[in-house]
Each structure stands twice: as structure tokens, then as C-alpha cells.
Amino acid sequence: MFGWVLWEGVTLVFVVASGLALLALRRKVGGRPAFTHQDWLTYFGDLPAQASKPRLVLKLSGAAFLCFLVVLIGGPLLVNLGAGLYSATFLFTSLGIVKLALS
Image (cartoon, rainbow, N blue to C red; front, side, top):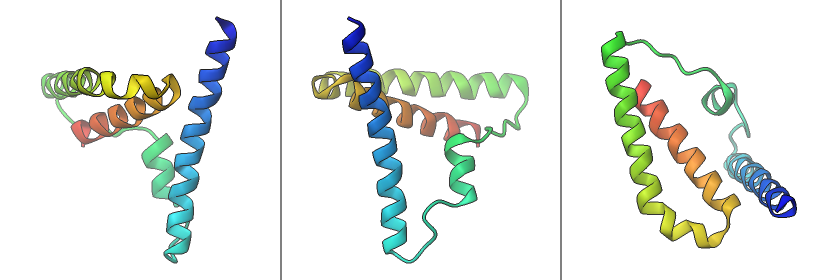
């Protein structure tokens, strides 16, 4: 069991690193900076939450529901491709949903 978890963890790290490398390569070929400060803040920075408490709870509840729908719809399609690809897809999709909900 530990070997499988280790393998899928390495796969997840590889998928995330490959995605960021392809993003940087695509931008470099287009003549733009590969990885900007804004990219760093988008992927690894703090999320600015500027809403009243009830509104923030409502927005986060909506984001959680959308993330749940992504798992329900995308789960059966992506789980056969491996846990690494499934986890990376779900992680980036959920981060995007939460970021849009808080903006």
C-alpha cells in the first residue's frame, strides 16, 4: 500500500510541475515572461477575502457545492487515468472555483 501511495504522490508532483513548465514554455515562446509575480500570487499567494461574514459564508458554500459537482461529474471520467492526474485536475479546478468565488 505504501508503494502505491508513494507512486501516486510522485505522479501528482510530476503532473503539477509539468503543467507549470508547459505554462512557462508557452509564454517564453510567445515572447512574454515565463513566470511573473502575478502568477506566483495566483498559484501560491494569499486569497484576498473582502466580503461581509454572511456573504463570505454564502460564497464559500457555493464554491464548495461547485467543487462537489466537479468531483461528481469529473470523477468517473478521470479516476481511470490515475490518482495523480485526477488529484491535480481536481486541485486546480477547486482552487480556480474558490478564487473566483472570493473575487
